[in-house]
Amino acid sequence: MRRAYSSNHAQIPCARVPARGERGVVLIICLMFLLLISITAAVSVRGASSSEAVANNSRTQALAMQAAEAALGHCEKLVTDFVKNGTGTAPSAAPVGGAPYTWQSLANWDGTGTLANVQVVSFADSQSGSSTRYFKRSPECMAQYYLVGTTNTAIVTARGFGPDVAAADNARSAPKGAEVWLQSVLTLQ
Image (cartoon, rainbow, N blue to C red; front, side, top):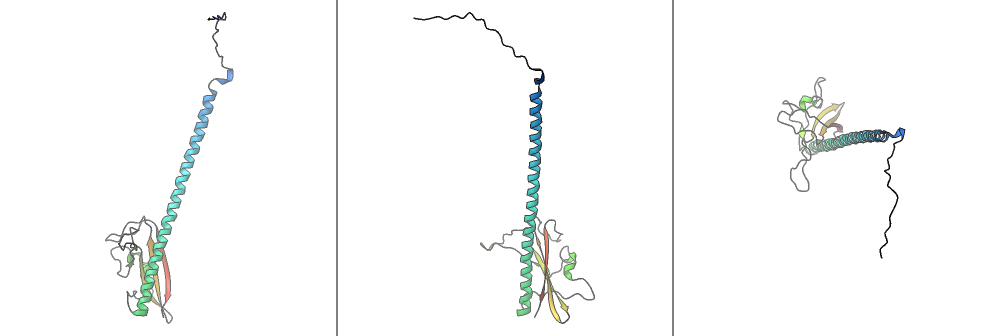
């Protein structure tokens, strides 16, 4: 058996009447929040890239320092071997009459007039024995005798380059990038 229900109620259309203060205010507030979030995100990205640049500069400076320390140790060993055993490369002569030491003139390091006493220290892969370079330009050093009273002394100067410095060409152009200079004074017996 089926029952039939009937309704005598007529449907009345429901129309919503907006309140006076609600005409588009929510849209404007959402757009303001979106603008604020976008500005915050842009500032964060810029700060992160600045931090990355600072960290990269510190890294290249540290690598240049390590290269200069390696070159300084290499040249110091050459000087001590020359003094003790008479083997290796002799440092250049002392300056005469107040002339600058050879390390003080950049022309002795860079340019076509580079002196032969600049020792280029090449880094090789000690594991495989190959001559793979970790740096584009190898560090350099030079040593020079001078006399303090009656004591013979050698001044050893080295400079190392970061991995961003281009390799030295035939004209030995001046480096552009991270560069560290180190110097030591050896008293010779």
